[in-house]
Image 1 (tube, rainbow, N blue to C red):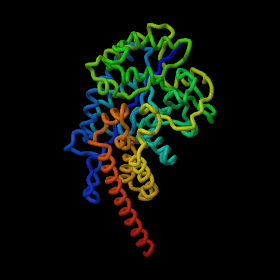
Image 2 (image 1 turned 60 degrees about the vertical axis):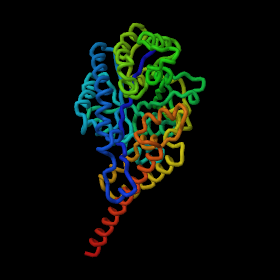
Image 3 (image 1 turned 180 degrees about the vertical axis):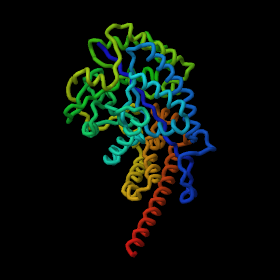
Image 4 (image 1 turned 120 degrees about the horizontal axis):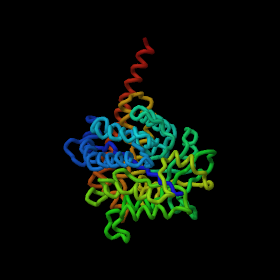
Length: 412
């Protein structure tokens, strides 16, 4: 039997506006620019919701109603949920209707879609708890499976996730991690006792996410029946095929006129034509299948770019400097006990800000340029550092006020 496990990442950041040097000290509204279409978070969210989230949710709801065997899973970042609540509550309701079917699993992640595990384990745990609380509040769901930002993973993350009580964790099935192993099995992370590891089958996932509309691809056009045959071929050489991808694949990365929605509508029925196939959620896969051995991943892996490492966010001096300065501010921010400052600091942790600063080129550069709302990575860095300097000033002022207030109380 080959089970199919669908997982979709749903995330949109609060993009930083074109924050200039002379804005420092006078403007604390960092994350919206009404005059810039490519930096206006509301307009971007409404555009993506209209082209991708809403039509795809309707297709999936129809499929769940038509096929009792069909199951899917999502992770929705906390900052995405906040924007849906504020800008597009109808879209959020459509996600709730999917969850209400009982065959949709919601996964846990960091609230701010951050790189916090790399810099601050304590902040990482706080964000995971914030996200779990939000998922309970919005969907009434208790996540059992964890996926870190952009599938960033190593042995240390697995051990931390197990300590937090999760049953399973997701990661990229990169060739340099697997070596001779097969991504279509469950594994146990090195150094854990009971945690299960689900690995993305990146070849089959990317056939949909990246190659679907590529006319130069040898297998173009990709039909549901063709893809279902590829999945069925796993029978006998694997137990679960993990198809992990960005939710914007449907309607945004692959536009409606490519036929992506017709492909999605037809896919479950084509998969079920093969009697040995079925669908599972990540937690069901972790329970059903025993691990085929331990998998040792000492170095970080992710699902980004051809290297599948951290270079999408930390490959140049700008990115590393921005991250270092941001997390260096943590003790002072926490000391203020100011919710507004803390929220702004955490929104700056969102991985997209560092992705926009990436200067990689060739194939990866095309991807980074496509997603970059700034004219250049350098503009992204300048805006970020200007905002960070303003935030630092606000923190210092707040701490000075608290210090003066404490001194006054002590004198009295």
